[in-house]
Image (cartoon, rainbow, N blue to C red; front, side, top):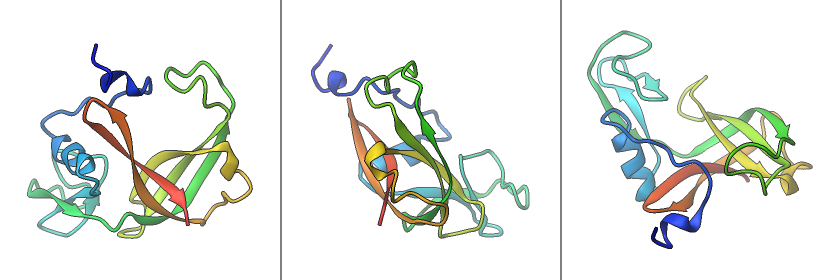
Length: 141
């Protein structure tokens, strides 16, 4: 196994034909979200058809990477594969600025516990998990 692949023991997302553009953009440190060409609605995670109008004309569009904490919880379990050494940490759900209820998930280090709150502003950053895998995450700003 090569050293780059061993960089992180965290889970590695499995890209497929539908999600590949999202992961390719993340590797380039860009956030893109699937958007309907017919009505402009953003879909995440990517789907075969638009959640709003059921059209199939979907493409990935740049997103600002800005948003707010929609929900969070402190994770104390030390038996979550790849995160054993990081517990406790904070799971967050982020509502992106582009659209109400356009949600993404991420995590924060426990040191952010005093700053995290519902509505806290966040911005995207990109976590390199090795092997060419880069995962969008968020940090409080």
